[in-house]
Amino acid sequence: MADMILVVAEHEGGSPRKITYELLNAARDLAATWDYEVAVAVMGDAMDEEALAASLGAHGAEIVFALSDEALAAQAVEPATAALQQLIEAEEPEIVLLGQTALGRGVAPRLAAALGAGLVTDATGLQVEEGELLVTHPIYSGQAIATLKIVGAPALVTLRPNTWRGEAIGGDAADVEAFDLDELPEGRAELLSVESAGGDRPDLSDAARVVSGGRGFGGPDNFHLLEALADTLDAAVGTTRAVVDADWRPYDEQVGQTGKTISPQLYVAIGLSGAIQHLSGMRTSKTIVAINKDADAPIFRVADYGIVADLFEVVPLLTEELQKVR
Ligand SMILES: Cc1cc2nc3c(=O)[nH]c(=O)nc-3n(C[C@H](O)[C@H](O)[C@H](O)COP(=O)(O)OP(=O)(O)OC[C@H]3O[C@@H](n4cnc5c(N)ncnc54)[C@H](O)[C@@H]3O)c2cc1C
Image 1: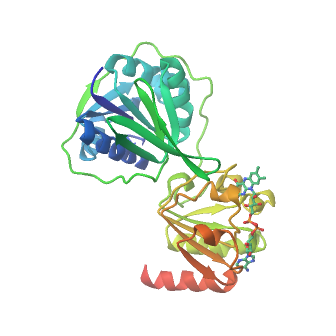
Image 2 (image 1 turned 120 degrees about the horizontal axis):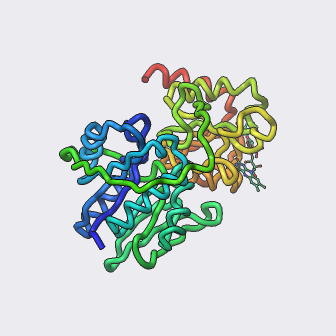
């Protein structure tokens, strides 16, 4: 068993996604406790491995395993799972960290089953107590936090995006090691296209700032007020299920139990009541600001800052003032 923590990188065209740096940050903290090596698995086809090694090294990676195969280019889960299984069986890391993302959600359970390994998903905390790794994650729609110990190795954990910082530490470029893969299976689902739903706005799943609007907006035509505020803050747009069910906004903007689970630095909740199913998708946000005309709305119970007012007065004013300072 190697004293290694393996991070499964995600990248776009060879440029690491934010979640990769967050995983590295979490790995670094654990590695410091145990003096483990921090390794990164990068999957793809025809990648610029040297550029990746420089940026990953700056975030604490010591070694980059390049898993290169044309079967990995389409981001299908079956070949990705098989490639990672081969690497993990060869290198025997103690801990494997993935993002709670489309890739991580697809790959981690398959990998756990293939390896007979323990898995905790959607982790929001990692601690070491008496030499053991304890993983916390929210349960019951975020009403409680469970702490789990994974028995045996490797311990597989998917981490909730935006929960760890992702800053660079200025390390040297990581060593790159090409890992020879045996033949990979074909994916059973083929990626046909990817279209950004939010246009130029940040992706809701990993945006640092989110502005969400509920039924208080009164109809689809009034959401331009919310979009103006979101654009001023360089934020993604979120919404509630009531709004989606009414066809005012698309489903991919829905936050909550049956929508997306997010954890941005700033969550601005406007004209939404804060139903438990909505809170379960955003209550771990760092700073929550609520605007609602009802002072008893449940959203104020989780908000750090609250404005009791009519959104049609406050939102345009807020946008105007923010535009002056930004
Ligand atoms: C199984 C299940 C799963 C669900 N999953 C989800 C989910 O994933 N996400 C989700 O969001 N919901 C989900 N729901 C629905 C959830 O229970 C609520 O019905 C929904 O979140 C309410 O949406 P809302 O806050 O927009 O509307 P409302 O509850 O109607 O709240 C509107 C709010 O706007 C305020 N308001 C009105 N006018 C103004 C104004 N002019 N200025 C300021 N404030 C104003 C009101 O005071 C009120 O608080 C789920 C429900 C079930 C049963």
